[in-house]
Image (cartoon, rainbow, N blue to C red; front, side, top):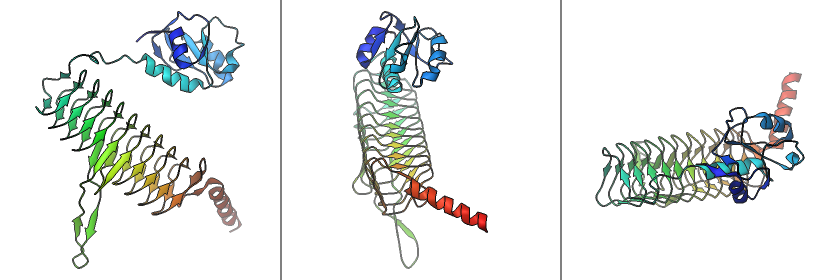
Length: 334
C-alpha cells in the first residue's frame, strides 16, 4: 500500500526533511532496500550506508539533521519505533474489510456462528456453533474455532490454530500457526492409597485482550475453575506455555520456550527471557526483567521495577554475578 512520505511524517509525528511527495511502498533493511522502501538508522555510524542504499527515504535521529544529502529524511526521537509504526501503516488492508464474509468452499461454518463483515475463513477451517468473529478478522486454513468462541475485530488467526470452546479474544489479536488456546490445564489430585491420579476439573475460561500476539506452537491453558487472562498488548513468542489460572499483565514480553506453571501472576511491563521457568503461585511484579534460563521457585515474589534477575534460583543480576565470580575464584584456588 503506497503512502506519500509527507502523510507518513504527519502520522508519525516526525520532522520531514526533503520531498514530501516521495512515494513509499514498503519497509526494508539497509542491505535489502529497493527503490520505494523506507529504512531506519538508530546509530550515526550506519547513516552513510543508509544514504548510499536505493531506499526512497530514511528514518533517523537528530544526528542526521546536518547530513549532506538529497535523500528525504524523517527525523524521529525513536527511529526504530517510528519505523515499526510506518510498517503497520503501509500494510494493505484486507480486500474485503467492508464487504461480506468470505468462506472457502472446503471450510465448515455452523449455521449459528456469526461472521461479521469482511471476515475470511480459509480452506478446511471449522467454525463451531455460537462462535462470533468480528469485522475484518482472518481465520487461516485448517483452524478449529470451538463452540462459543469470540474473536474481535481485525485479528489474524494463522493456519492450524486451535481455539477451545468458550475462549475470548479481543481486537487486533495475532495468533501464529499451530498455537493452542484454552486447552485443559495440567491439574490432578493423587489418591493416597493407590497412588493413582484423578483429573481436577478444568472448567474455567481463557480471555485474551486487545493487541496481544501469540507465537507459533504456543499453548495457553484455560483456568481450572476461574480464568486465565492475557492482558492488553502482551507479546508471547513461539513455543511458550502458560498454565491454568495465570494472570499476565499489560505489555508483558515473553520469549521463546518459557514455561509458566499454574496460578502465576505476571504484572505489567515484565520481560521474561528465553527458556525461563516459573513455579506455581509465583508473582513477578511490575517492570521486573528475568534473563534467559532464569528459574523462579514456586511461591517466590520478584520485585523491583527495572531490576534484572538471572540464574536459578533467580537473583538480582549483581548478586548472581558476584556469586559466579566467587565460585570461579574458589575453583582456581583448588
